[in-house]
Length: 219
Image (cartoon, rainbow, N blue to C red):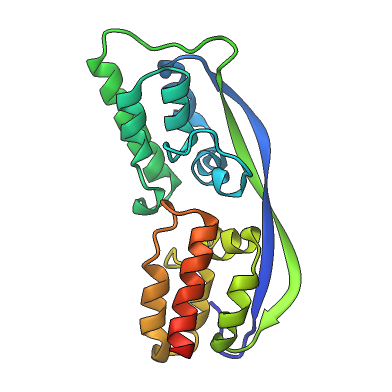
């Protein structure tokens, strides 16, 4: 837990993809691999796209939904999986269970198992986060007005998205730091935490954060 006198150290990050060895060519194989894939693989297939320069199926918000639409051509199931917001679940295991239940429901109701072409299999990739110290830090919350607009996408990802794996209340680093300053910043914290990270891009998150800090400190 940060303290009031502890500076906010600005970090940057990148996600490195690592093969898990799991792959699927049909929906039942996807379901079986999903049940035993590493947690970081599920995390990567939901959040990894935020740091990728391109995302070829932007209408679907996770890699499972995108592949089911593109590879298996099952639009109805892809849409069901696409609206799953990982921030609604307490942890990756709860998210994994929801994915399995949605796929199981489809398999129970379907007369056949959809297949993809051999050259369009789904490969489970797990991510490892690489963290960089930018050697920049701020000492007072008002400095966020100038600091956040200058942050790179990796810094926004680390402090606003990946922080949810590190903070006790699954919030972001900005809110956790402001909490150390007492109740005076509770309104600001609530505004920061109201941003939906999953259905936004990193640029949109940065713009919203910048606007919130500017309006709060400069009026």
